[in-house]
Length: 76
Image (cartoon, rainbow, N blue to C red):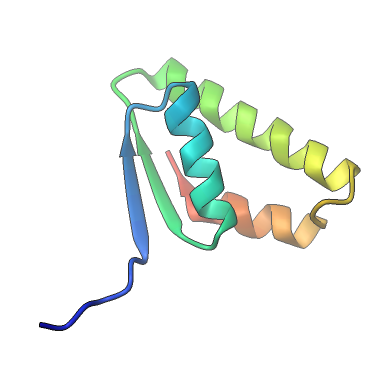
């Protein structure tokens, strides 16, 4: 049996835990699909991710290119 590496992760339910798991996975170079029945919850997750990544840039934990790369891997 061939084992294929994980490339894409889907998270159903994007409350605080799901949103943080999604951000962590995207930070580790996985493509992430975040799914929720509420558009409002998805928008909050998106805004939270932007704020968190901006904080990381300001604290020099990541650079602006890293931030953009992470954001491109997150799909809402």
